[in-house]
Image 1 (cartoon, rainbow, N blue to C red):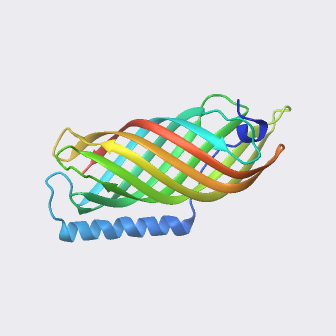
Image 2: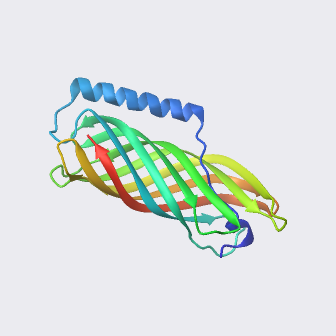
Length: 213
């Protein structure tokens, strides 16, 4: 079990309108550029869409917490953007996590970020993903009388991931993925347990998605 404060830290990301607008603008610009100037990989060009469901583990760290455990749950992601070159895709990603292991404190995380996917060897289909954006942490605590309290705060999110496109048709791939999302929200006042200092959540996910090229 996580120490009293860290156990209660659950995350749900509500993304700010400015970052959402920026991500949308980047996706649109990338799609326009790629449509006008696609350098034509037979497999990757123009607009692309990717989504999937993943098993997930989330851990909460803070400077005044005790020992930690990983909370289990389910995660999902949706990515879209344009093809800058056969090796580079640019876009936006929305992701979410929900804790499912029945703790007194429940965690939901959702976020949005600008991402790049890089394919070093086109013929193999493997890629590296990096991203930066925003995440909001919501903490839900069930008290002894059955009431539920909620605390939330928005902070920085970064991501590193790997994937592999397995071609099934000219425009569709099955894509196994592994991702890490790190969300830093600073101090969090968790009612009724007190303040958790320098809260950092680490979300690890693995699953399978579908990519439309």
